[in-house]
Image 1 (spheres, rainbow, N blue to C red):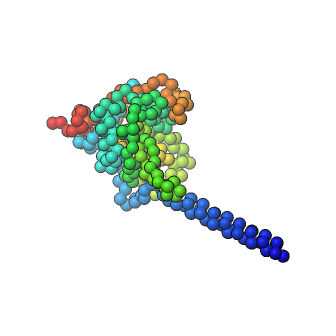
Image 2: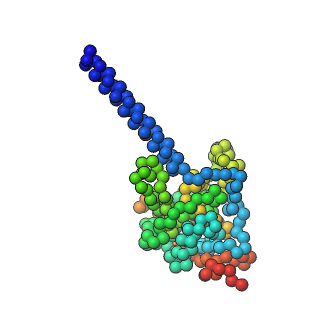
Image 3: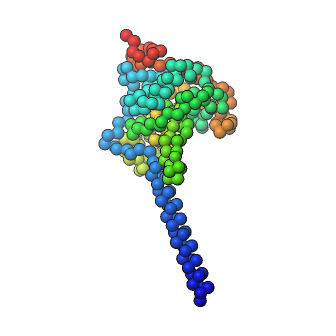
Length: 270
């Protein structure tokens, strides 16, 4: 009888321990999911600025590649730290003769690496705190600062969260294939019909939403964005590396105007 009671007690203790462990795992899982969520979207105040196009005086970047030129408007009011980092790197010639180091199945490309393996020259421009905005999304032609690291303390490692960082290298978004089934799914799950319609009409990569800092939107040379995403590649160093070198020859800064004459200082010239 005593032996039986011991067995029952052991089973109860084991069940209790397992229950507590299950609750802990469930709790930490919920906390990780909550802490890994990005930003709250308010459809009432969301302004899809990328659909508006550049305005006179807006800062722009003119990117000359071995496959042609493309231009994009910058968004310092929404992503100030990342845009400042990009502009500072461009002014210092940091993008001159850098590599397009990844090209992914017509969906997107990654560029601006000093080295062919996708690595940066140094870490000086690689630890900028990620900035997310409900007004900026990975539509076709979006330019996004590439995530580089995450700063986590012990609590973050257990429960999720932390400070995400990005750097000088950037993603150039082309688009996934929007099938009829996917279009309907996006409409069903979207928090705002305007956002769903924008992805469907403009194209892009919805899975990138609120994961990386959007610094700009291409308004000229979209065919170059398409080419860069569709290069012949080989798997190398964790990237789909272009078989033939494709280079960013230079990045010039300017302001948008009717004639779009770039200014090296990034300031309007009369």
